[in-house]
Image (cartoon, rainbow, N blue to C red; front, side, top):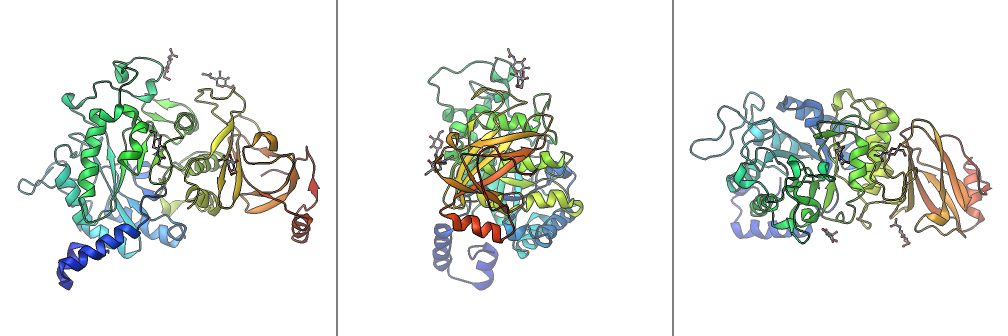
Length: 470
Ligand SMILES: *[C@@H]1O[C@H](CO)[C@@H](O)[C@H](O)[C@H]1NC(C)=O
Ligand SMILES: *[C@@H]1O[C@H](CO)[C@@H](O)[C@H](O)[C@H]1NC(C)=O
Ligand SMILES: *[C@@H]1O[C@H](CO)[C@@H](O)[C@H](O)[C@H]1NC(C)=O
Ligand SMILES: *[C@@H]1O[C@H](CO)[C@@H](O)[C@H](O)[C@H]1NC(C)=O
C-alpha cells in the first residue's frame, strides 16, 4: 500500500506534509501507464457472474503460475460488481457494492489482492448505467473517482453504454460503419470537425480529471469502441482506448456488428498505428486466448496484440488453463517486445501479403510486419489462409534489414536461434499461425561456429532454404 493511503496515514499519524512529499516522489518516480497494462479481466470468462472468490482464485494463479513475475499484475473486475437494487447510497451517493458477491466490499478485496503484490482494477460507465445495467457514473464522476481511490483501486475500465439523448455526439461515429451512413453514423462530420470536442471526449475527460485529483495512481482505460474517432484524442485522455467493438473467441466474423473475431479487429487496428506509443495505447480488447480458438490462432492472437502494443489482459479462467494457452501467455520474448522500455511504438506492416498493400479486408488483413526492440529487429509473418504456407522474409523488403548483411535468425516461439541467413529467410507457417522472428546481424563466422557448437544448423544458409516447421 502506498504511503499516501488514508488508512496508513491515520494509523501512523504521519504529518500530512510528509505524506504529501512521499506522494509526489512516488508520482514522479512511477512508470505506471507508460507501457501497456498486463493482467487479468473477468468479462471474457465470467461475464457479470463474478464474486470475490473468483478474483482471489485468479490472483492466486497469477502468482502460482509465474504470470505475476512476468508482469501480469492487474486483477481487473469488469461489469457486475455493484448492487442493482440498492444502486447508490442515499446519503453518500456512493455506488453500493453487491455484498453477496463481495462480502468484504471492494476495499476488502483490494487489500487481499495488494497483499499478493498485485493491483486491483474496477469498471464503470460514462452513461447512466453500465452495459449490463448496473449503476453508471454519469454526473457522479467525482464521487466515484474518490470512492474507487478510497477503496484502493488501481485501474478503471470506463465503458460507453446508456448514453442519454442529450449526451449523444453531434456527429456520431462508429468505426463498424466506416463505409456508410447508418444509425451509428447518422450524419457525417464536416472535414475539419475536431472530434476531441465531441460529447464523448468531454465526458471521458470529466472522469479523467476526477481520477487525476485522487491521491492514488489509477490507470484509465477508455472503452468506447472506437466511437467519436477516439484514436484522435485517446492518447491525450487516457492510458488506453478501445478501437473497435468487443472481441469474440473466433477467428473471423461478428455478431450484430457489436462483437468481432480476431481478424476484423486486427484489420481495423492496422489503420490506427500512429497514436500508440509510451503512455497511450490503442486497446484491441481483452484476450480470448484459451477460450476456444485453435492453438495456432491463440498464438497469432496473442502475438499480434503484443506486437501492436495493446494492453494484454487475460480473459480465461486461470484455474483450468491448458498448458498450451499458459505457454502462450508466458512467452517471455513477446512480452518483452510488448513491454520494451526503449521502443514504444507498434510493429508495422511492411507489406500486406495476399492482398495489395493497405487493403481493408476483415478476413485477410496484413500478414508481414516488422518492428524494433532492444533485442533486435523483428519480423512477424501471419498466415491468414486455410492451409500451411511457406512465408519468406526478403531482407530487401524489411525496413531495418540490410540485404548485403548476414543475420542470425531467432525463433521467438521456441526461444532458439535457427541459423545464419543472407538475403532471405523462409519458414513454413501453419494455417492461422504466425512466425515470430528476431534478426541480429551475424558479425563474423564465430556466430555460426557458436551455433554449430550448440548443435544448431550452424552453416550459413543462402537463399531458398526452408527450415522445418515452427
Ligand atoms: C459496409 O460494411 C458493412 C459492415 O461490414 C457491410 O454489411 C456492408 O455491406 C458494407 N456496405 C458497403 C456499401 O460496402
Ligand atoms: C497521439 O496521437 C496523435 C494523433 O492523434 C499523434 O499525432 C501523436 O504522435 C500521438 N502521441 C504520441 C506520444 O504518440
Ligand atoms: C479479402 O481477401 C480475400 C483473399 O484475398 C478475398 O477472397 C476477399 O474477396 C477479400 N474480401 C474483400 C471484402 O475484399
Ligand atoms: C528499425 O530500426 C531501423 C534502424 O534504426 C530502421 O531503419 C527501421 O525502419 C526500423 N524498423 C521499424 C519497423 O521500425
